[in-house]
Amino acid sequence: MGELRPLGDDLTDTSRALAQALRELFEGMEVSVRRYAARRRRDPGTFSRYLNGTRFPPWQVVMDLFADLAEHRGTAVTPEAIEFVRGLYGSAVDAGSSPKHAVEILEQQLADADRVSRRSTVRGDVLGDALLDRTHRIADLEVRLNQLEADRSAERERADRLAAAHPDASELLQERDALEAEVSRLGRELREAREQRAAAEARCDLLERQLEAVEQQHAAPALPTSLPSGASGRDSGSGSGAGAGAGARALPRILIVDDQPDNLLAMRAVLETLDQELVTVSSGREALKALLDHDDFAVIIMDVQMPEMDGYETCAHIKRRPRTRDVPIIFLTAMGVDPEHSARGYAAGAVDYISKPFDPWALRAKVAVFTSIYLERHAAGR
Figure 1: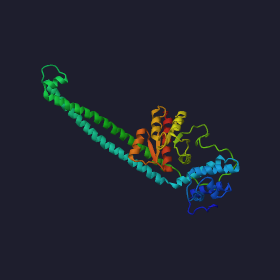
Figure 2: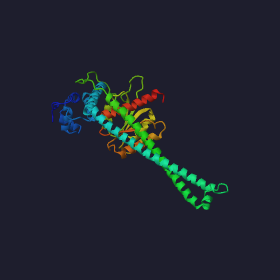
Figure 3: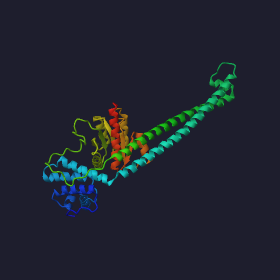
Figure 4: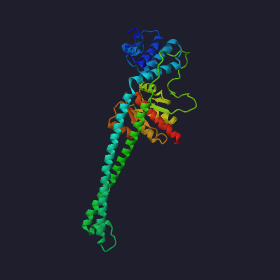
């Protein structure tokens, strides 16, 4: 375990390029694999597989290599080198997935939304028929009650006096009241069914746009085989996002909320290929603070399971604020996307969801579509 193993056989171009870049970083420290693994308290066999390309490393492993190399040399690694490796990492992530897998995920979500729409349509039709039947029955009862009243020579009496004078009227009045209560209930259920159908149709439209976005993603360009040369400089860090310092044009902001640093780094690596400014925070409270600083986020990607304030609670706070209630929220969940969890997410205010481990193509497509919607609204002056 002391020496570097040869690069693995049958590596893809992207995996080979990433592994070669990591090997160059590691070799710059002039230390054995076993010794470095002990320094970072990692398994030497696993770390060796990271360096020969047969196992995909967490992004934190890459950042540790940069930090340790900078410490060894006494000078910071250049931002260009970090961005170069970040690009290799993102391409390798893509290679571990594929547009085909993303299409399968989105098509399954589209099928689920279509099923909800069809069921809501059928339920709405049934409720509409029942509502029409009860309305006709009430009208018939009103006619019969009017006939009973017409038999009286005196002017119209109050309902209790009519019931006392005509025993039959009491039963008719009770039936009418019961039918009116049922009409009120059916009306509420019909409105809910129509709202559910409208939401499902909107989700179908959104997913179709996401499928188009996956299809439009271009293949990554050919990858260089070595780290860029150049003088070392100070690392700009990851907090400012992809769009920091990128000219006068303001880039759409994306807020990423996850309590796991590896997840934040992985999502940043996937999304930084898009023309956006990424803001990452590690808790619901930090997310609310970020929204106080900037309320013009194009979309929020939020982990559901977080300590103290989970994604549902954070989402509810966001939706209660007038300035942020319209910001779309994508839930990122490791609990699966069964109807119970997705229904709770939609009830909290989320508009979309994706499961962990997330598919990079699907996540990028979802973010790209919400960004496009944000830009369309701003272009229209809304």
